[in-house]
Length: 262
Image (cartoon, rainbow, N blue to C red; front, top):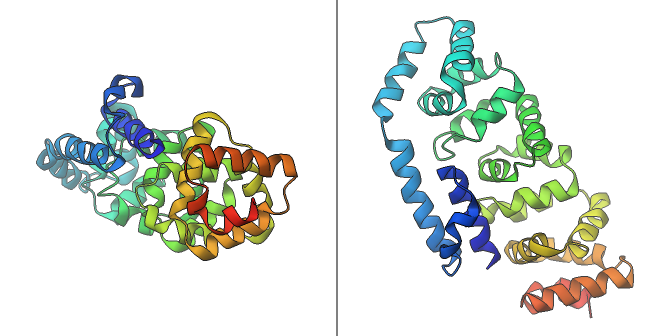
C-alpha cells in the first residue's frame, strides 16, 4: 500500500524516528495511519502552546533583527518552529526575511503545517522558492509535500516552474491535499509533459509503487493530457509503464492512460 508507506514516512518524520520502526503499521490503510499522525501532532504541537504564544508575544518587544539572531543562535530550528506557529503572519514573514535559507529549511521541517498556512499566504514567493529548492537539494520531499497544499496559487505556480519533474512527483507523493493535485497538474505546461511521462514510465521500486497510484487522484482532463504525452514515448517505456501499472492493480482505473497503453 503505497499511500500507507508515505503516511508512515510522515509519521516517522513527525516523531523523529526511522520509518522502519513503524513497519507494523503497514497493514493499515493510509487514512488510519494519518489518523495516528494527526493525534500525535496534536499532542506534540499542542503541548506548551500557551508558553510558545507568550514567547511570540514577548518577541514583539524586541527588534526583529535581534529576535532573528536569538532564534538562530539560541532557540535552534525546533523551538523556533514552535514559536513560529504562534506568531502573527506579518511578524513571521519579517523574521523569515532576516534568517538564512538553510536555517529556514531546518525550521520548515519542524513546523506544524496545520497552523502555518497564514504565513505561507503572505511570504514572498521568492523566499518560498529559495527554501523549497534547499529542501529539494536535501532530498526532503516530505516537508515540501506537507506544505504544497497550503501554497497560494501564484506561489504554487512558481514552485511548479522551479522544480524538476522527478522532484514535482516526489513532492506530490507526500501531500496531504490530494484534492489539489488536479490544480497542481494543470499548472504544468504541455512542453514539460513528455518529461513527466518519461519519469513516470521509467520509475522503479518504491518510487513506481508510490507515483502510479498517485495518478488516481487526477481528474479526467489531467489524465487525458498525460495520456497524450505517454503516446509519444518509446514502445519499451510504454510497455514498462503498462506492466508496472498492471502489477499494482491500477491500470484500468487510469482511464485515458490505460487506453494510451493498449
